[in-house]
Image (cartoon, rainbow, N blue to C red; front, side, top):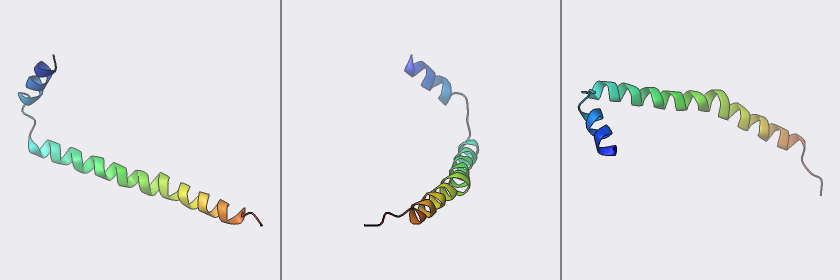
Length: 56
């Protein structure tokens, strides 16, 4: 079954241009997620943790 699907994929004729543009889009999506979600969330967590420091 797996061999059949692999053979079907390889005979589909996907060009290297399609693979390259897909890879560039995936990397761009990762960078956008980092800029829009991860960085602000990390900054907010650091800010909150600095404001709510424990006194020992």
